Length: 274
Image: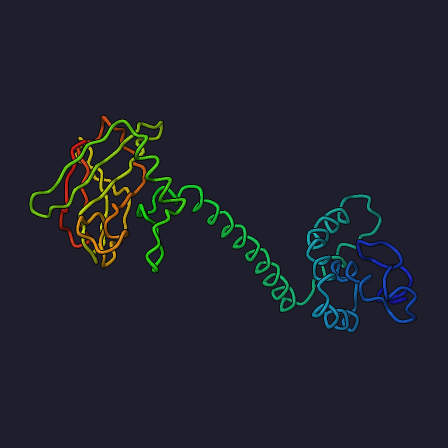
């Protein structure tokens, strides 16, 4: 009797079959996945099952789960006293290499998609957790319409700055840019908030911590728009309000020599001693 079809299945679901195919007078392809995985189908039966497998996700999943059974059963069949010296040969048959490669590629792609989805979710969560303090924010936080209501990030940076006790201010005589650095010691280094005034755009800047050992560490980077920040003669509230930038440094406060506000093209706007 052919193992393809019939009333007894070889799949993980055991005998019989529930669902629309129950009671079907023809072969039950779903129940043949076990026999196919073990290499028990003849060429015609294997070809017929492969045609079914190409469009059946359930059978593909079952075949993936059964993929490790054939070597184990083959090894058991070769044990002394098994009484079935020929079964090892029958279990050594494999599906065609082309089909196996296609199935492996499909399974690998699905697992890769799951890993990518998990990675993106973790990355998004990490950005919300650790990225917020590193964002440059204006005190007014308004949109292009010139609103003056502060955004949550801007309010947080300004509130943190105002609560800090250790602050140092400096104004560069050549650029007239003024900066106040607030710091707070943490187990991992220093929490740092910069209040920046009298800076005109458009420019791109970075806040850099310089250690007493000479090492340099970039705390944050940002862009200054055309209207600038902290300008006494600014035409809008956005231009008049200072810029608050929160970030963190690996240096502790007593390991830091000074802070620099630098443009991307290497110009120092202001230096603040620690």
